[in-house]
Every structure is written in C-alpha cells, then in structure tokens.
Image (cartoon, rainbow over all chains, first blue to last red; front, top):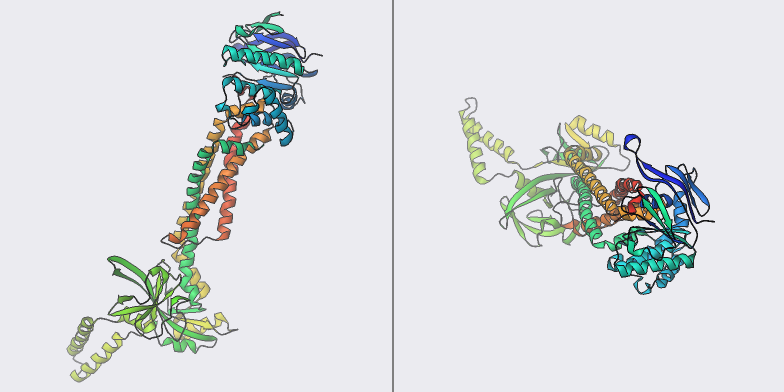
Length: 229
Length: 400
C-alpha cells in the first residue's frame, strides 16, 4: 500500500476568464520509507501539490489517497475529518520552522502530541526522547528565538515526527539554512524516512539538495514533467 | 498545556503593562461606584445617625436639608405632647466657612439639645459636650485636636471630643455644639446691628402719629426683643412610641400645628431623589462610558494579539489543532487580563479610598456586579479575536 497516492490531481484557482490552473493532472505514488523530492522553479505549482496532499488545499479534480484512505475525489469527500487526518497521518515541516515563539523547544513538540490526545506527562516524555534523538537534549527549555536555524529546524522535524505520521510533508525545509545545516537536515530526513517507515515529500527548488532523494518529481508550469530515481 | 498561560509567560512585560493600564481604568470605574455610594451615605449620614422617625419642619418646605426651614424652638413641647410621640428634640443645621491656617475651612455645624437626641453618634476621642456653652465635638475629618479652639461668630469654641464619619449631604464634615450655641452662631446679631435695628424700629414708631411716645418706647423694646430672639431651630425631630402609627402622628402634627412632619422614609427620598439624583446619573453615565472604553480597549488588545499570532494559529490548525484549543487560548487570555486588571483596580482603590476627598463606599454587591460585567466584557471582546482566528487558513503557515 502506498503512503500517498495522487491521481490526475488538478487545482484551479478562480473561475471563468480569470481561472488559473496551478497544478494539472498530477499523478504520483509514494511508498512508506521513501524520500521524495518535488522539484521545480518558483510558481511551478509544487507547493499547491504539497498543500493538496497535505489536506489544506481542496483539489478541483482528481483523487488523493493518504495511507489507504481516499480523502479527495473531485473535491474533499463528505464526512472526511481533515483535521483529524492531518493530526494522525501527516507531519509538516516548513521553510521557516514555524515554531510557536512562546513555547520552549520541548513544549513545541509536546503541543503536537497533546493536540492528538496524549496526556501532559506522556507528551513530555515522548517529546524529550525525540529531541534527545535529534541531539537537542540540552535545548529542551530553550525558546525558538535562542535556537540556531539548524536547531530550530530540528525541533520542527521533531514536532512533525511526534505523532509518528505516515507522511511527512516538507516545504522548502532547507531554504533558510546554510549548506552544512541544509545537508544535515536532508540527511536526517532520509534517516527518519527509513527508521520510521514514513513517506517524506520535500518541496524544494534547491538543486544542492537533490542528492539523497529516492525519487525526484520535476514540476513545471503546473505539470509533473518527469520523475527520476 | 495551557497555551494562553504560556503566551502570557513569554510576553509577561506587555501583559502586565496592559493589565495595569486596564486596571487603572477599572479602578476609576470602581471608585465611581464608590463615590456614588458615598454620595448616598453622605446624604443620609445625619438623617440616619439622628435616628428620628419624624422631621418636623416649616410648613410647605422640604427642610431642613433640601430647603430652608425655621420654626420656634418651643414647638418641641407641642410635638412631644402629640399622642404617639415618645421624644422630641430640636436641631439646628448650618454650613460654616471660615478661614483657618490661611485656607478656607468649611464644615457643617449641628446644634442639638444636650438633654435630647441628635448629638454625636459616637465619641472616638475625648468626651461629649457637658457644658451648655463653648464646647464642640468635631468629626475626625475636620482634623482638629482635642483642646483646640475655633472662633465661630463672637465666641471661641473648644474641641472636647472627636466623632467618627459624620458629614453633611454635600460631604462637609460635621461638628456638634449645644443648641444654644448653634442658635447664637446662626441668629445672634452683632452689637452694631442690634443698635441699628433698635434705632430703626424706634424711628419708625416715633413717626407713627397713632403711637404715643411712651407707647413707642415700650413697643420698640418688645419688637426688638422679639426680633433678637435666637430661639429658632431648623427642625424638631421626634421618635415614636412603640406601636404608634406614623401616619396618624404625622396627620396630627400637620393638622393642628401647621407644620410639615416628614417621615424618615420621605426625608430619605427628598435627599436621594432630589439632591443627589443628577450627580448619581452623571456618575452612572461616566461608569457606562468607562466600561465601554474598557470593552473597546480589551477588544483592541485581543484583536491585535490575535493578529500577532496569525502564523501560530495557522500552524496550530495545520498540525490538526481543534478549534477549541485556539478559541480557549484567546478567551482565557482575555478573561485573565480582565480578572487581573479588575484585581489591580480593586487593590488600588482599596489602598487609596480613604484618601479621597469625598467618601468612597465599596459595597460588596457593586464589586461583584462589576466583576461579572468585566467577565462579560472580556468574553464578548474576545469574540472579535476568535472570529479572526477561526478565519485563519492553515495554508497561512506555509511560506516564509
């Protein structure tokens, strides 16, 4: 079973003469444990593809299946609890880490766990383990403002992994990092994909980071123009 | 995890400053309520402390507080003789402003029959008046010392005792002297005025052809004596005998004495509905305006704080947070701000209310009602922020 399946996904913004097709007839499958890049220039539609898979952006046409659950077929399926699916099946990593500034590193990870129903003590224990595993055991009580870019992004990765999601969606995770930190983050994602058996889709236009991906989907003008291994 | 508390902890400087500002505003609202209650308490202080059931005043007047009333002192005997009246005592009231230590010094002077009632309600220092003349009991707020002398009219009066918080309906502190002294201070003319007055009457009578010179001299002396009499009071207060019917007693006094007997309840209405009504409405309006300002400020603070957290809210939504988590964060912050600001305002007034120039009366019920209003305002104000937060799209978390 694929972790992510997308069939002929199309997203059109606006209508009539002002309609803009951001992504057209996109089809892809990602297996658990696979690290996949969606590569393309700015405005090519890669973020739209990611947000449609991330259950944020309703597709106009086509099908989205997450971990065997069909969530969209010509639009969201009725009765689908998108928030719950996002909570339980998906993890997100952002370009600018998006840590909550008034929470410590530990609390930033805990909040994702508590939202998913874990008690405070369980969340604390699991968040501490995760951060320690990402070499942030000494930064548990640090606020995002005092973390380096690399550390903040690792906390964001810990938060994305907190609920052991089937799919991790990363939007330009290395864009705000220097080459060393970017390489480290990509290495970490690769390791986590294998260890956690999670599918990881990374949107990037950073050609420096393309090595190490299991597959690369090239997107241009709203279409997937090729996939390389 | 309580996100509201975490946010407050992180931005504690801003939160504390905002709460202090709001607390000062609520302090003003609390003090307005206290001043309003104080107006009532002041207006009714003498009335309540006298403990009379009936205030007998000049016919067709609302005296002695709302209007001028002058009646002969000896009416006390006739009032006392009315069936149902247990005791009657004459009282004299006047507001006095003198210069003391180079500054205007204003107070309310009450003259009372030392053998009757209506004197100082309690003595907190010194003693009560014992001599018929030249002794005074002053309210604490007059800031006089025992033994200190105050010149009123033609005589010096020695402070022999200090009483508690007794004030006139306009808030001036009260002092007590014997009725005879009060009458002298109020009605006794100075010697030049008496001489002038006697000469004027004598001259008028001498010009009257129907009055013989011997009669004129006799009449002049009689008329002057009558006019110079100080045996006038502003009211005679009466207490009813147990079981006496108030209405009947009032009816008897008004029918055959041509006086107006005002019951204690009626006097309360005259004082509260008439004398302080406008001030009450003014204060009420001020309170409404200040509460509206508080509501606008809280709404603005919560809205701005929500705008500051758009990315946080979008991120929370993106990671699957339920709306109740976000609504709870905004609502709790708003309520906490309101509660803390209320606490600051309350403490501020509690620590300073005795230093206010006018009496502040903090009633528990007023404070409770205001607390509920503050909670309602905070809840309603937070809707603005909540509405904004609920409209935030998870997609807003993406991008730089």
